[in-house]
Length: 207
Image (cartoon, rainbow, N blue to C red):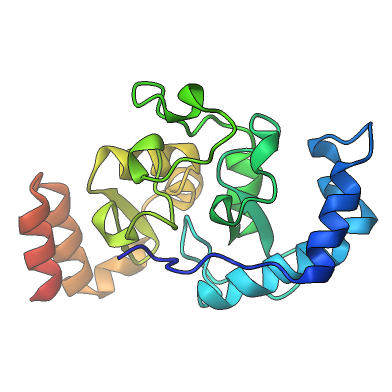
């Protein structure tokens, strides 16, 4: 079951606004930040924030209600895939840090080739993407988060951790000594890092 099982159905007002914007001869992906689309962005942001229970799609940290603290994410970046700027399944919300770090990085799996076979049609399966996709994937199948530290359970998980630098806290501040006061978490992390089998990792979590 994917983490977002129901994509947004935009209101009539939003659809009319989008229709007006894309009909402008000079329209480009840069118009996403236009004041005319403020209501559209708000509708998308509020919908996915609720669906995601106020958690960033990538790092799973809490995101605020404000536009500055809750960014609408184009999973396939709008600068590369302008046809999918308003595609519901290409949208979710993320935190400011993940937004700044991921930016325009390529997420399409070139080996799978869905984007290149028919670039006007949004992919219908997880295999088209190199990273975790909330509309197609379950986060826990690909990434394990332990007290703000991230471990990949799949290639997609590894790509997501790298693309969004999810272990940025570890890279910037080093290992958190406070974990020493939580033997259970420390032991779990040790076992996870020394186990390459997803079944063993899941068994540890369920203990």
